[in-house]
Image 1 (tube, helix red, strand yellow):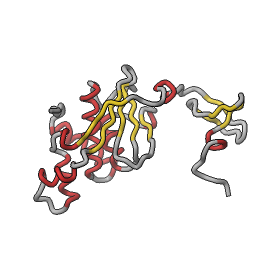
Image 2 (cartoon, one colour; image 1 turned 180 degrees about the vertical axis):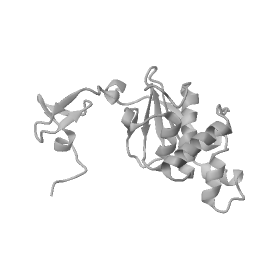
Image 3 (cartoon, one colour; image 1 turned 90 degrees about the vertical axis):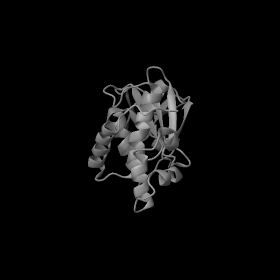
Image 4 (cartoon, one colour; image 1 turned 135 degrees about the horizontal axis):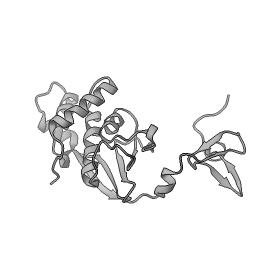
Length: 198
């Protein structure tokens, strides 16, 4: 059985911080805060981090990310947060020193469990908001240790590395180029893009 290693008062400070950033507190932000602290416990790291030891990959955007950013200290601006959009409230946390990684998702029955922990709230949304703050981690989350399918050094890359695409002439950072037969291209020119010129 997992022990919650942070007090309710400590967690409350993080709920307030994410609410301030987001404009209000919602259930997914609470999941994000709690998920970050569970990752810290499983990887034996102190959070929120002051360095860049923890790298986090989230699988969706939105309010969940606000909570997990606040609890971990990971951020895109610090190059410690990546998003691979699977549309899932899920995240993988990687200790860049040990390369240990854990993926955490909400428990499939977390909503049903929440109704038992806060049955008297005025709506299901309010039940989730209240219960997620107090439920034991094993009723709130499922986790598994994982191994990355991409090289960690390639994922982190080198922040000062820059090349130019031979087709569009735009600069490519962080070793994200596509190289074919000795030529360098950006992925937008030769692989896939989310936009088209008009």
